[in-house]
Amino acid sequence: MVMTNPSIVAPALNDTLAPMSCTGIAILLCTHQGQRFLAPQLDSIVAQSRRDWSLWVSDDRSTDQTLEILGAYRRKWGDERLSVRVGPGQGFRANFLSLACAPDIQAQYFAFADQDDLWDADKLATAAAWLDQTPASVPALYCARTRLIDEHDNTLGYSPLFQRPVTFRNALVQSIAGGNTMMYNAAARALLMEAGSDIDVQTHDWWAYMVVTGCGGNVFYDTQPKVGYRQHGANLVGSNASLSGRVQRARKLLAGRFRSMNGRNLAALQRIRHRLTSGNQAVLEEFERARQQGLAGRVMGMRRSGVYCHTSLGNLGLAAATVFKKF
Image 1 (cartoon, one colour):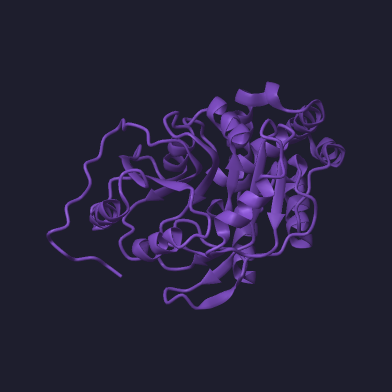
Image 2 (cartoon, rainbow, N blue to C red):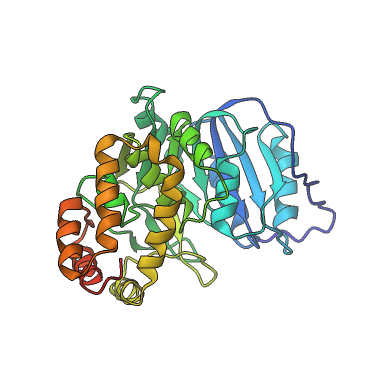
């Protein structure tokens, strides 16, 4: 639903806002030109069975009715539920990291949210139930498979089902879940803050997976979807579950984009290299060394590093990237 009431006034936005009281779960939602699907997403958030949440929104200079919609919901929910601020204006990755690293946002758990999805009513409760099992001092990240939906909320299918272990060896070359499924604890959030919001990584969700696994934290990949991941023409990042999507990804990999992404991620890891476990530091060193070797050295180095993808097609692409020095 698109709101068109001219009496709705956009919320006043400030770069620095007084913090809301600390809640159990801080939902971190980034918006940009989101008027078309924003209201249904907000409705799915307020319908959550877990009620101890606050919603923090960072808007990246929307010129449509996104701010008017947010203003209406803030008046309805109250300032203790919904806060809106100005985003950095540097794309979705920087926008999400600006929220993840904002020191005034305090909570037990933190959940990323996209502006155009639909959440199942037990999404937060399910993630929190798993996180509750991890000691607060141990970094922990919950993520999940998604249900793909169209512009009319019809189910199109599901994101790929991954069944291999979730480890740093995998995180170095693959992001297994969308940020729209992720929730993490304060210990994981502290690592993201230490690395900083100004890092140049491919995506905020891949980065979170890499950081938590690399630093010896716990990651749980839930095979039961709790998010309707909307697929539409304006998606900044869509699902690559289809065969054509995977072929397109393989082409980009062999064109050198994969090597560029890895280079940026590896540079970012230097900021928290001292936080990695000794075993993962060794994996990282072997992977970095392999990228600089000739063919025989690359092949042997990749074998020693033990990095892997979750699918046969992904591992085939990784092997091809190794041969042609595209990783």
